[in-house]
Amino acid sequence: MAVNGCERPMTPPDETLMGLVAGGDHGAFRQLVDRHVDRAVALAQRIVGSRAEAEEVVQEAFLRVWTTAPRWNPEGALFRTWFSRVLTNLCIDRRRRPRHAALDETHDPPDERPSAAESLAADEEAIRVRAAMAGLPDRQRAALALCYFDEMGNQEAATALGVTVGALESLLVRGRKALKNALQADLRGEGT
Amino acid sequence: MRPERFRTLVDAYGADPARWPARERAAAEALLAGDEQAHAVLDEAAALDRILAGAPPVTASTGLRDVIRRMTQDMPQHKPLSLGEILASWLPGRRLWPNLAGLAVALVLGVTLGASDIGVSGASAQTVDDLGALMEPLSLDNSALYGS
Image (cartoon, rainbow over all chains, first blue to last red; front, side):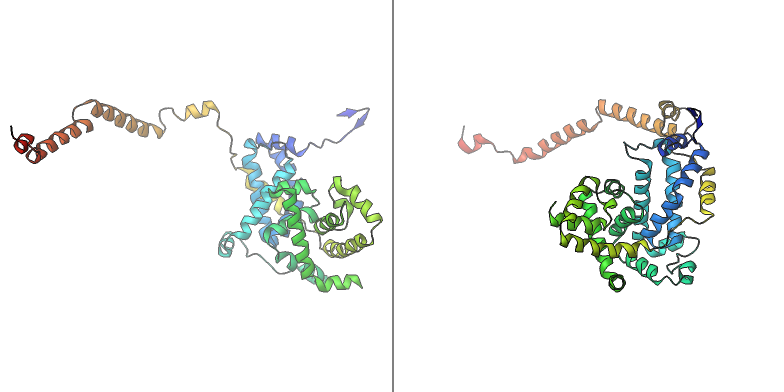
C-alpha cells in the first residue's frame, strides 16, 4: 500500500496470519514458521536440554498451531505468548515422560553431549552453563529461559507459564540462586 | 522502594534495569543512585548475567522449516462443527442409525411393559399377597386370649 508516495512492506501481525491459517492458508503458516522457528528451538533447547528433542517438540508445537488454528481463541493474548505457552507445556511434558518413551519416539537418540561447534571452540564455560541449567527443576529452567534468554517481560512470561507474576519471580529467584551455586568457580573468575 | 524489594528484583531479573518490571524501574534506579549496598547487590548479579550472556545462540537446523511445512501439507485441521454438519451426521447411511433404532425399540418395550400388569408393580403386588398368606397362621387371635 502506498502511503504518502512511499511503499511500505506488508508485515501482517501474527494474529492476522493465524486468522489466515485458520482458513487453511499454507503461505500464512509458512510465514509464522519462518518468524518463530529459531526462537522456538532456542527456548525449547534451554528447557529440554538437547537439540534433537527440542526440534521434535517444536515440530509438535507447530503441528498444534496448524490443527487448532480454526478453533484458536486467544482471549486477548498475543500469538507469541500463546505459542510460548504451548511450547513450554510440551517441553515440560517431554521432560516428565519416562526416558524410554522419548527414545521410542525419536528417530535419533537425543544427544546430551556438547555440540561439535562448542567442543571445537573449547567453550567450557558454555558447557558448564548448560549443565547448570540442566540441573534446575523444569519450571525454574522454563522461567529463566523465557525471561532471560527469550527476553520476555514478566507479565508475558507469567502468562506463558500459567502462573502469577509473584510466582514467576519466585521461580526466577530460586533458579538464579541455584545457577549461582553451580557456577561458583566461574563467578570467582568473573570477580578477578 | 525498600532495599529488600530491590534485592528481590535483582535476584529475579538480574542487573540490567531493562529487564526489571517497567512500573518499578524508576524507583529501583532512584534507590540505586544513593545506596552503596544496592550497588554491591547489582555487581553480584551482573557477574552471573555476563556468564549467562556467553551462552552460544541457538538456531533451528536448516531442514527443520521444510520438515514442519511438509508435515502439515496434508494434515487436516480441527475445524469447529457447524450446525449443518452436526445435523448431517444424523442422516441415513451413518453408523449412528442402527444404534438409534436399538434405543427406540428398547424405549417402546419399556413403555409397554410399564403399562401392562406383568410389569414390576404387578409382581410386587403379587409378592405382598403371598407374604400375607404366609403370615396368616402366625397372626394372633385376640378373642382367644381375652375370651369372647
